[in-house]
Image (cartoon, rainbow, N blue to C red):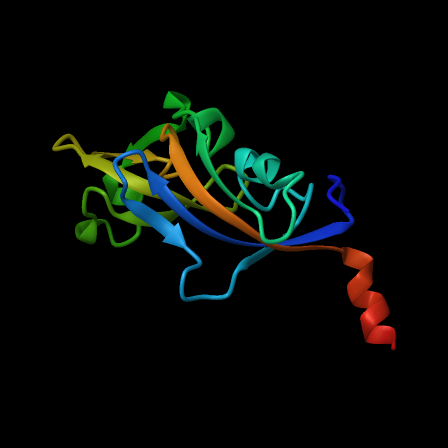
Length: 154
């Protein structure tokens, strides 16, 4: 069954790289990635590329930012008084830290710069937003999610 539905659990080996060849993630030497089709557990272009693949099939794909982690959004760059940041003396440009957002949830942000006037700028974009990326894919299996339940019932 190669359809696209919330009823398929997909297992795939992959290597993700940037256009310059730098590998940012791989399942090589690890367990393959398993996700449920249609559940938005992987970037859209990755999921779309696996639809229709057969177990054992390999494929190379190139994803533009819109199909990967999205374009960079300038509105996701914020600044705040440095003194309001916990452990502000230890801030390093490029560092990833968790900050409380307006809804009271912690959100990961990258320190862009610390100004002498007392403000610190943070980028809440995904670290790979704006990047085109590549994947080498190998589909290991695609099974109905319900198959796990029926196997457990035996």
